[in-house]
Length: 301
Length: 323
Figure 1: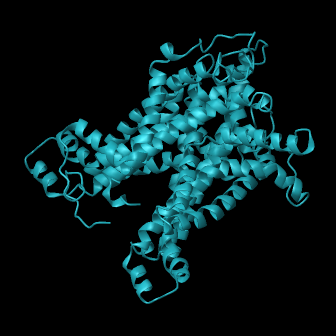
Figure 2: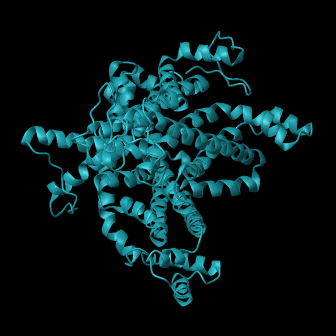
Figure 3: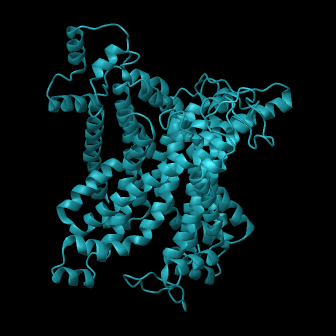
């Protein structure tokens, strides 16, 4: 680990490295320096594309039953085989990617940004507000993610929208805690004091001076949230308490038939799970690479 | 040190109370009248008096604060009411299923930790070699693999293996037998679920061990120990590992709560009759008294395991309690 004092407001960089101007240069640099992270991006982009353009890519209608071709093994006609109701598994996985990303991204973004605002606000105002928010945080954090999600589902019911709500709520305090602890360290730096002395409004100081400083840990967390949310959605759907038929979802594809036909038609069980695993794996690889780039303290590990 | 412990234990009480309040609020956010659902599900028509009787039985005709006090008082006395689905006391429903879940959880922890710490250490010592690469891939994959899928795959695997060996597929029975009565049968039931649910646990602890170990190995006192010519074994075991284990302990404790969440899904895969499966059933059946008791149970376990982590942490690193 190199001992360079972090200058607030700038990202710590390698020696002799000139900061790339613009997001494009930064992206190219990331791709060149982080081969493993690039693999992650490629995996995520493939599945993201699949979800976006499922209508055009998918060879079959994901909900259409073909009773002449039930539990068929992978073949040229059905690349990944068909399930017990004669539905094409590849098509269902492609459409399932859409569900996974919609739930994953929406929950992560809403949960993440709510946590960001609460975390920075809590650190900035301090005092009673901070104490109050942190106690609430402790309480919500004591609910394991899936348990909280189950409790929320038991209130609002199942379906895509409710699943998003159920997964978003437990993500908020998890983000809040990390953001708050990094925001605390810059609460009393001179330029924040200066901004206060100049009479800037609270929201201006928070948005312009504090938020940029917590962007690194925030982005790293946001990435991991997407993976966690996709896993949580799959678990809920598998339990029958998440996304409901006929919406194609990976967790749902593993429900019921997958176990029953495990020995006679293993492809029903294998491919949807593989899709979940690969997507989350890709997101995690990308997240790790992002952490290496944004958090120099952890570099070389 | 003692003051820290006392303070820390006292802090558990408001958190538990807060969690109870949250559960209480959540369960009352359920739209509609619970009694209408209950009476309506029977398919028979009901009278106003039956509705009022049901309200009185659950106690929702009283002011909310009285209900809350009653709820808390019930929790203190381990009286969670009766299940709205089976009509049996909630405590009884939970007590018969708790041992299975507990055994799987403990076994998973033991397996996970006993693999994670040595492998994580080796991975850090041999950084950037093929061993390191294998261990890291194994652990990143573990965080990405859904427990229920791993469960299905392991069932598939067992079926195929037994088919290949004996000619017909075999699966361990799902009727739980206590460990002391028939250890072999008991282990054959809980082993697969424990491995399935423990994989993620193992992966996360392994990652933490590796990165903590890498950090510690760069410290000055390790260099000093090397300069003194100490055996590598002594440096690793006595000097490095002891300090590296601090963050690992935190992760093990935090992940224990995650493990309970994982059980919810895993028990479903293996048809294990534990509290995780009971929770899914209670949500499906809209059995609110059972759901709130189970959520409270899980949250209490999570809060207590956090407490244990902080205690162990203070014991391992006395500086913590001085802050």
